[in-house]
Image (cartoon, rainbow, N blue to C red; front, side, top):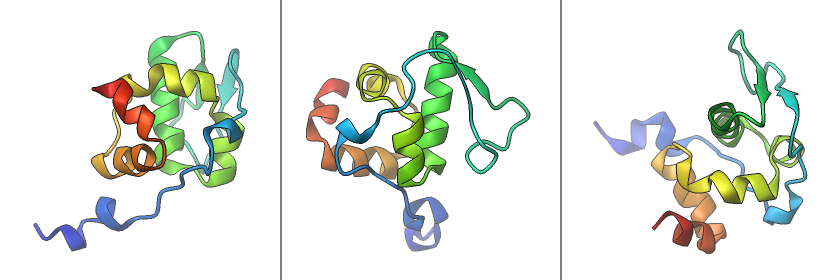
Amino acid sequence: MDRALNYANIRPYAVPRALEELTGPADGIVTLPGWLDWSPRRSYDLSDPTALRVMYEQVIQEGREQDLKAYLNTDLLVRIWPDLILPVRVRRLWESRFTWLRDQVA
């Protein structure tokens, strides 16, 4: 398949200018709006590691810059970054801006 025709390779993804901009909740239950998560279960308990990972994957892949700032938390993101399952292009975009994230995965 031609990579140029693969939507995942050309779609825009938001990346914050600085991780310190991510001031979302660090605990509790978060309910994502429909434009970020269109599944029937849009609430995530941040104390549940699996729910936290799934929510962060969803926000990173679907969110606009203001969504990243509102729903992601810098400390949580840094902690779970190695465990996130993200498209290769998304991971590269984030790790090219924040190179030390890449070092955490290695």
